[in-house]
Image 1 (tube, rainbow, N blue to C red):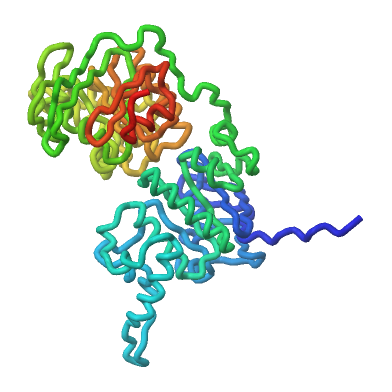
Image 2 (cartoon, rainbow, N blue to C red; image 1 turned 90 degrees about the vertical axis):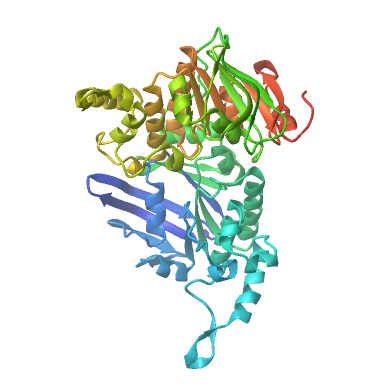
Length: 510
């Protein structure tokens, strides 16, 4: 019998990692193995321990128990700088760039080459030469080196972060939700960079809630659940359903529920009749949202979907045309007018536009409902407490209490608070802009069931989404936008990815 090949030494290995915070066991006995030139995806629901584990590997946290090995040698990093020197670099979801500095300055920030002996003057010539090479490695032109980071689109900022990592002789690149703010084109560009990194021997740890991305780019998947290893998938076994099953501990055979059949799409509740809004297209727009239906809205970035919803909600002034609710004209000059009429908006960026993050869960639930909670003598505290308790229980918001700052909750629970504050008003029309962005798969399933239930009770739901699976799985009817105009409409029986993309890119309706 011939001798087999010696097993490959892992590039990075975590052995039995424990980490506790006050009142919380974040990680318990977690093990992870990353091979050279491999993309290992780490998936799990919010709170599963993914970010905590990555911060331990990158030296941000120290484990309470367990060990870490790099190329077979035990390591213990006393901070991110030490991990970076060893070749382990973490790129956070919130990019860590100095926006007011140039790309070149960011590439070498904190480790600038100098010249001049004791005077230590920045060696700008060397920085410029090295910057050109680093940018080329990630597919950016040399002309970007001299521009300020604040002028770059999100996708290029992500590539600058990667280029900065490459300047440190990176061996392990940890990417936390790298595509959360990228367009499809930018995402594909990122995949090409990851392929080049692999070809150069770099190992990548890839964290993402977007399971379709994981299927496309991962060589293996490690799944965490409740701070523990839940399982591992080899390349041939990486499917959406297999990952979901391990992540949530149950089989989500009906991820998109569709329980509100029959009777979909009754009378028009909200009608947009030949409307034009400030900053929008010259040609007017017309569409309607019907009772008991989920109207999906698709389109590429810049197609005008969010802008249209903001115009209906009173954020952007209407220039002409008419809005009607149940056939009667309504005047919407500001968001308070829309809210009073029963039209509410769950915005795309919940932290910026949907929540007051430093304030409590209760504060956020109460904020748009004060007119219903008050009396001549102020807010009725018992009534307010009842509202908090009802919506926390009704939406299964995971929070220690209504007094918890909402910014400390997971993304899925923050999103549920936004839903709760609006549903407490018993609206007629619910506009959802990217309803599950940054939400883990378990919370997604709960939100989908909620949306479907609301439509089943006769609510008119207008759902704007860039998630094709979400669009196809949840919509009863889809309107596709292109360059600010309605490019076409697809009924449920004609709804497929090819038809959506044809309209979104300016093609004719199938």
